[in-house]
Amino acid sequence: GENVEQHPSTLSVQEGDSAVIKCTYSDSASNYFPWYKQELGKRPQLIIDIRSNVGEKKDQRIAVTLNKTAKHFSLHITETQPEDSAVYFCAASKVDTGNQFYFGTGTSLTVIP
Amino acid sequence: DVKVTQSSRYLVKRTGEKVFLECVQDMDHENMFWYRQDPGLGLRLIYFSYDVKMKEKGDIPEGYSVSREKKERFSLILESASTNQTSMYLCASSLYQIGGELFFGEGSRLTVL
Image (cartoon, rainbow over all chains, first blue to last red; front, side, top):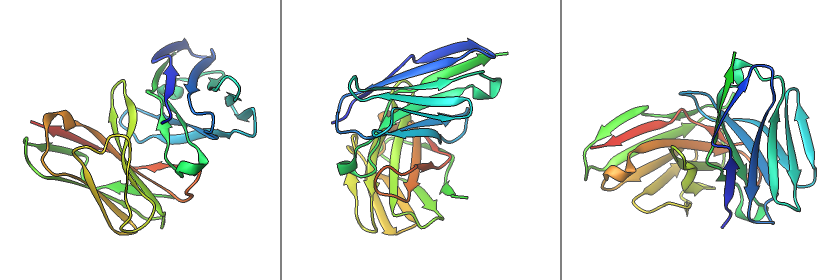
């Protein structure tokens, strides 16, 4: 099956700096890659996603890039703020397994004021 | 606003007990999922369901079963709880079978003594 690896497991940045979280996947047939944010004690929520027919997607301070050849995708957060502190999960999915997502192990991001 | 409700936020059970975790969604979603969340292991899929009375095994189904008698309700059952099932359990639902956003519940933290 699919294997998603996520790095780093923890990340600390100063407020205003950028943060980058990277994921790799093993199954070249995967074609949908969402990112979820989980604040402490709360449920995971979708923050951005990308499909395999595009290489980059932006939404205000967050962006996701996808390199299909290398089978990796990354989350970029610019101008980080304390409220960005959370655990971030990447995931991969492919059409013929329906909505079965394979999640990375998570990155705990701390933004230091 | 989609709401996924898990009946119990915290449970403490004894080894060998039968445990029911209930999940209800109010948006008429076809797809429902049970994940287990452990530190350093991310989110792992236990079971999922695309329709009433339908169920499919995920990556770690051993020791668990599920029930989906009604579209809005998906139950996770631990027939005989063991200490290695101490974990956070997350229920999720989605509208689209392929590549749709997962809406998570708040989670049920189960401790098995």
